[in-house]
Length: 311
Image (cartoon, rainbow, N blue to C red; front, side, top):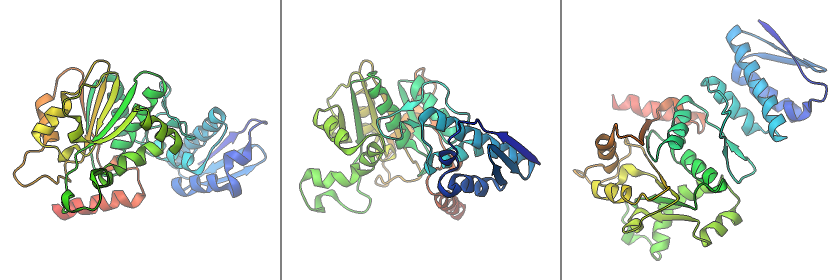
């Protein structure tokens, strides 16, 4: 099958095709099609379904370039993943953050359901394997709400559960001891804003990144409160966290129930909470799976290999 796409005379072809046609090369490789261009005509040929998918990606590339004035390799890879997973672009309420990336979009149907759940509910639980974007998308939604002045504060918390190493034996003061546990949350924030802005917000107490234990006794109003790695919370810790929810706030609880580091015999607070609160209005439970992994392509293969080993 062959499909011809006509470009507008004012189309910035260098930006659309990429330097040395690198965007087109990505598209060719991902979709298994042939792409050639002559002047303002782009010809895509190959299997019918592959041509249709490649044309869909190409149109999204053109639209993103028009909307944002730029198109990079990361954008092209994101659009390819969207089309492969049959995801329609977000037409309303895009996740607009402070970084140069500006807009963050879901790559899979599961991620789309997750984003919609966070927007529609005051409490959202999300479970799934590594690389599915549980924490990243939660932080993105929180930062987007902060940017729109829908909230006044973001609180990011993690339980400091030792995985084979005791906190008391780690060097340094308490801040130095807990920083390794909080590092993934800082990594997500750094994708949403530059370091100086993140530091300013933290100094102004607009953003807090803290161990879960530091939340005891607080009530958080007009905030997005995220509990990451919640599979390592006990029943008592989870109840304590959930009852911090204040007026005008949202809570997002994420975790991977296949990576529980609690002591043997201790009940997982995340699993218990999802079972106990299931069906309550205003509470959503989203389960992501292997198909939602969006890290390096090898991560999905690694997860699948370990799952087969367990069988």
